Structures are given as structure tokens and as C-alpha cells.
Amino acid sequence: MKLRAALGFFTRLPIGSAPLPPTFRGVIVWLPAVGLIVGAVVAAAVKIAGLFLPAALCGVIGCLTWVAVTGGLHLDGVADCGDGLIVEATRERRLEIMKDSRLGTFGGTALFFVLAFKIGALAELAGTTPDFVPLLLGCCLAGCVARCMVFVAMRVPTARPGGLGEALHEGVTARHEAIALGLAVAVAALNGMRGLLALGAAALVGLFLLSAARKRLGGVTGDVFGCLVELTECAVLTVCCITG
Image 1 (cartoon, rainbow, N blue to C red):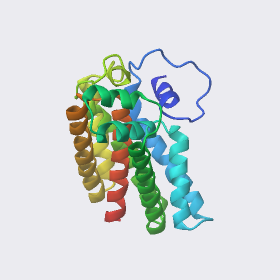
Image 2: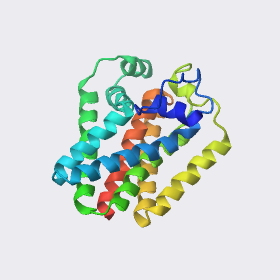
Image 3: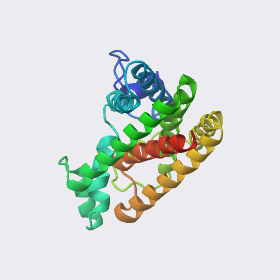
Image 4: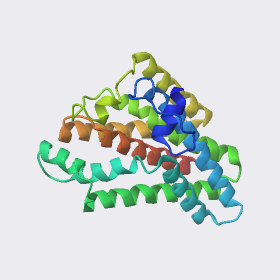
């Protein structure tokens, strides 16, 4: 089952021991559904934590759950993009830096602020939304919309032929892109005005990152996709806090 394969690659949820498919063909199209599941798990963790802990610690628990469920997969992209996109260097050198497993100052700073944004936003949501449904819808909105933005990123040329960024394109059609867009709009609509504003914020943040990647790297990489997910999640959660 492709959804199971997507959960097996993009999360650390216990899905059994069935072997994963050798390619991404037909798997990546389930990414928005993965985002909905991740958001639901995080919302449940924040709600349960709220029964025993103050809102500030609920934010920490929620962020920890987010990292645990995804295995920190996208955070690696944040660190690599922080090191590679911000530094002044040639395109080739930036790609070398992003491929290096060592964490630099810019990458560490980027990681800190992304995690801080998530902790703060989840803490605010835990403190201002006592009902579970608004919290659930907000977390699912962040998880889903952020992963739908990956389909937008697929329109940008790859900067490293043969890498993960190129592999993610495999099997994706215009129909899949339309479904992802429709799902993002539907989840946003369920959140009312804050959902539509969050969708706009995610688009602005995503387009800014993709523009920087195209200018500085010549296109997207797997790290850019991961960074895109994390940054747009932060953007959506921030809008949810502002709009209540």
C-alpha cells in the first residue's frame, strides 16, 4: 500500500515490517495525507499534556512529538539550507556544504529558531484553544499545507541531478498536483479565515525559499524540500496563533 510506504519513509510511526518499494513512484502523492496524520498525532499529544502540564511545557511536548513522529527528517534540511543558502560562496561550494554532514553555525541557528517557533506556537495554541477541535484543525492544517507545498517545489528544476530532489518527482502528474492543491484548500477552508490566511502565509514563505534556492543553488534539492516543510509549518502555526 502506497500510504503505508509513505508513512514508512516520512515518519517513524509503527507500520509493520513490510518492505518499502524501491522507488518513490506513487508514494510521494500520499505526502499530504502523511501531514494530516502527523498533525493529528501532535494535537493529541498537546491535548493530553495539557491535562497535567502548563501551556509552555505543552509546547515543548508538542514539538518533541513532532520531531519524534517525523524522525527529525526535515530538520536536516533546515540545518543544511541554513549552512548552504546563507553563506557567501559559489553555487558549487554551497552544494558541497549542504552535502557535508557536519553542522555549521548558520545551520545550528536555523534549527534553533525553527524549533523555538514551533514550541512557542504550540504553547500558545495549547493555552488559548481549550477545545480539542480547533487545536486538531490547526495542527493538521500545518502538517498538510506544508507538505502540499512540496508539489509546488517540484516545479522548480533540480540542482543536483540524481539526488533525492529529483527522485521525488518520479510518478507525480498534474492530477496529483491538483489533488494536493485541492486538499490544502479544503483543510484551510475547514479552519475558516485563519486557514485562508495561513495558506497565504505558507505560499509567501515557500516562494521566498524556492526563489533563494533557485538563485543560490540553481534549483531544489532534498534538503530544500525538507526545509520548505519546516518553514511553512512554522508559518501556518504562527498565523493560527495570531488569528486565534
